[in-house]
Amino acid sequence: MIGTILRAQSGFFWVQLDETGETLRCVLRGRLKKIRQYTDLATLGDRVRVMATSPGEGAIEEVYERRTKLARKSPKGGGWFEQIIVANIDLVLVTFAVANPEPHVRMIDRFLVVAEQNGIDAAIIANKCDLADDHARSVFKIYEQIGYPVIYTSAARPQGIEEVRALIRGKISAFSGPSGVGKSSLLNVIQPGLALRTGAISDAVRKGQHTTVAAELIPLHEGGFVADTPGIRELGLYHIPADEVEWCFREFRPFLDDCAFANCTHDHEPDCAVRAALQRGEISAERYESYLKLYEEAGQIMV
Ligand SMILES: Nc1nc2c(ncn2[C@@H]2O[C@H](COP(=O)(O)OP(=O)(O)OP(=O)(O)O)[C@@H](O)[C@H]2O)c(=O)[nH]1
Ligand SMILES: [Mg+2]
Ligand SMILES: [Zn+2]
Image: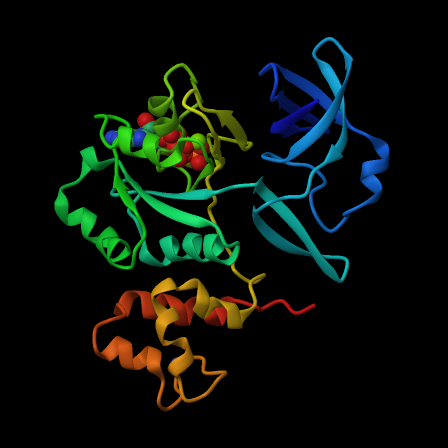
């Protein structure tokens, strides 16, 4: 039987079977543990072949090759270990609030760079629109200009929900973003009956933890899956090669071949096409600053 992993916890994997829609709690066959040790063996979004072992339970016999992945790397034993947040993902929903907590361009750019580096489409969700006026939205305008879909939502009002539904229908997508921006709250409105845990920010800060503790993939009534993920407080980019950062700023791409130096960092070199575009106002100063900052931070750990 073939299915999709919805949840992974304490060595168990919850697999939804294609044919019946039933979910089995599965273990991983021992022989699978001998391969692919640089990455998560099996994770949310993975397509797997399972064998039923007892009612409601099974064993994963095979994990199929991943089409795409949203991953972060960390150093391990002189190499890298890749932690996969969601496998076979089509779209990342980079979620921020227009207020409470305040959005920061630098932080938004970090999430976008991670999506771009993984080669995954990204859209921006600007939530809590009930809390702020149009001025608060101006942060997000730049992203509309450079071609990211931006959806203004409110889980409280609610607002923008139908647009999000249309965007994620039939795909595998994931809500990603800082803690307290309303990822779980939005999902509860998108698909009534989910009853995902949500929490007041003050509570989360006091307890020093996120309300959502583990990512899970939710099958959508309208087709497709969406992942709720725990908020990320710090998103370091040290695992991304510095020379890949320019590509992750999508509006830089048309200019990258026109710099005088092939290895131009777009910082101080003469005849830099990126800085020329900045001067002409075709690249925003905020985004350019982000680039310099993130370039400097990227590739810090060498292995
Ligand atoms: N005013 C307003 N409050 C909202 C909205 N969406 C969520 N909230 C509140 O914001 C707080 C955090 O919401 P959550 O849905 O738990 O946030 P989260 O992004 O899932 O947070 P983590 O699970 O910690 O990553 C809760 O108190 C929600 O009630 C909204 O659109 N407007
Ligand atoms: Mg949550
Ligand atoms: Zn340049």
